[in-house]
Length: 429
Image 1 (cartoon, rainbow, N blue to C red):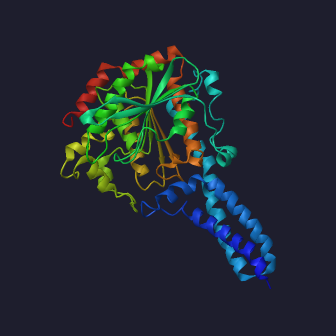
Image 2: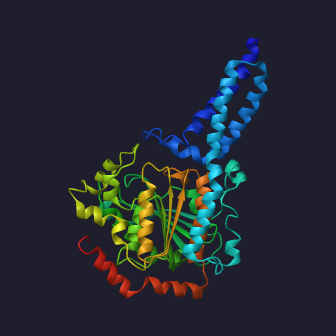
Image 3: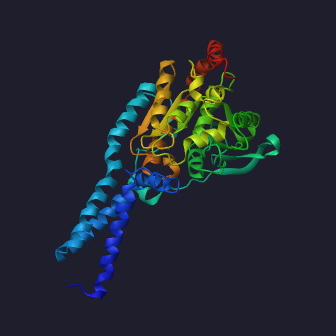
């Protein structure tokens, strides 16, 4: 017989175990609504924490099981289920890393880091996942930061950007970061941890703004990105930016805009593109929405473009990066989560295959446990993994020796490619 005063710690253990099971369940259960979406996004990313949480609960329940109470055994079974689920992402990591390493080598060459200075390689993450970083967090870096710098006023709307520079004065390659938010929300101040991290490793990071739907519809957002790129080139020397080594990196809607801006036939020279779970085929996404569909993808697309694909087929084509696939596009890294119920990974895979078929350098990395916006948890499992490969991809292109950069540059200024691209998009401009 358990005395009343002894029941409190037992109830707390039951509660601990129940919370662990509830949170772990969202690793495999898709979020049906936008309200529950943070659980579906976050649970896989904190799975190392959940594993520790469930393991501690299991140990305590095993100690209590000596009392031979049916409730304890029932709770113990639930805890075992929670522990098993929380271990799923970690159990998938080795095979996922092996596939990603092969993909990087096949696209960039087995010795793709050979031309990257050792000083740059020394600052990269040593492995795709670290328990210490997962449990303690990735330490913030000290960098120079310029905020709220206005670069344009289209229709009277002030557009600003944030600049993160390495701590030491010099000249550096640049990463232009474009935030997500379904083209309807967001700001350049998003994801500051990533921006600081990359700046501390030898990049000038420009986080840029754009006008939002539904008040401003496509192509306003693309025009704003192009305006920001012009501003960056005009002020490159002031902010220690090497205009010959610029990459675009975007998340979700920002990845869509990054690819569009880089793939335009008349685009300014861009060395590389990094696409984190971005829409690439808007008509295809409208015709085949995810199930469940927590954000109502069709409503988002109508808000962005002003109608349906049947009503506006040319605009959907014009707004889809898939339309602009042609030879000699900048090297592209595509990273998607296989459990994404906003932008389905199969569309990213098709984009990768199309880029490869056209003879482009492209890397496809699929994270089987990850949801949309997986990198919102900066020290999470998926972001550590994505960061490991992103910094290697960018370093192999932007941090190469001058001779290697000159060789690469000839691929992206080919007049024959420009003509090919113009022919491909004729009728959509």
